[in-house]
Amino acid sequence: MSEGPIRRHWSLAPFTLIYRVVMGIRNKLFEWKILPSEEFDIPIISVGNITVGGTGKTPHTEYLIKLLKDNHKVALLSRGYKRKTKGFQLATTESSAKEIGDEPYQIKEKFGGIHVAVDADRRHGIHQLCENASTKDTEVILLDDGFQHRYVTPGINIVLMDYNRPIYEDTLMPTGMLREPASSLYRAHIIITTKCPKDIKPIDYRIVAKNLELRPYQRLFFTTFSYGDMVAFNAPTSKRPLSTISKQTHILLVTGIATATPLEDKLREYTSKITHMEYGDHHNFSRSELQLISQTFVKIEATDKLIITTEKDAARLSTCQLDEVTESNLYILPIEVEFLQGQQESFNNYITDYVSKNSRNRIVHQRADAHKS
Image (cartoon, rainbow, N blue to C red; front, side):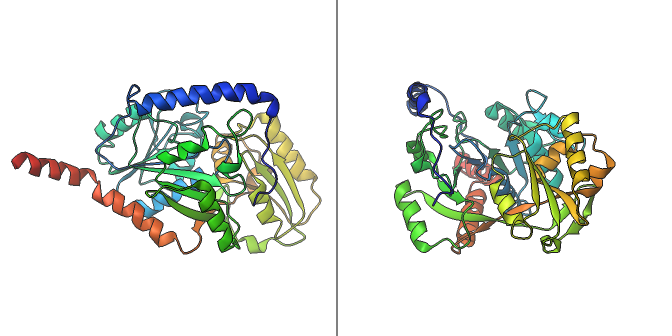
């Protein structure tokens, strides 16, 4: 199943034991109600994981936004990882990635009709969204990376698992890559196995389901990524299909994400001439790094050449001073979620039914009727 064995740092095993004890005590304190977990009278859907590294949270969150935005006023609440601000921040058309974080900025740019806010204190952030005059029309809140934030009890907990790094084969940090023990999955209502190969076999579905030891109330889905047309960085309406890439095309791939292997593999379907400048997840590009990117591109001897980056990286690059060479040759490659095994309708119905049955207006009317009775 895996692209390779999951890395384990056995020399750190004593620290893993300490981490396990601390996580166990914390989870017990929530289960015993010693630490409070607040429920809200508004539909809240959490999208998270228990694995360090990329599992595809942003594309799956965008899928939910597309699913819900036409019939409900959607708000996204994130902590705004690596932002330069603190406290509650409501995104506006003037907000930058430095102020709200690259992922919230990316989503705000793509979906202008929704509310996007950041707050490390998720309870406070939800109260602000529900009570502020400009956002009190919110009908459903998507909680980004909220599985470990147990001070909020979401109506639906979605946990993502990378097909190539299955949770049941991994161990706790720092020996492995798990934020919590695999047993914590009992809190999830939906588990989505992401980054699956499109030719996945039925036996693989059964193996994953068996190893996860699902409970009766849990649902398992499988998704893969599909790639859209490349979008010119300096002209969002100008697009270039991937099919225009030939064997003679030389690509300078610039990424600062957790896992760039699937993206590089996709591009290698079109050309083997790829120079990959890879940086850490959520990387903030320095002036010298931007100069190196430009210099590397100029040195590439090819008639057809271009720079490709991800939407998340483009959000951070939008705050940088790019030179003309980089800006005029830079393309963004968007990704979208595709459900496998004909599961899309089942997933969509599960989400939309929950939101409709737990809408704020419905709850208010039910309370009013109960009061009259």
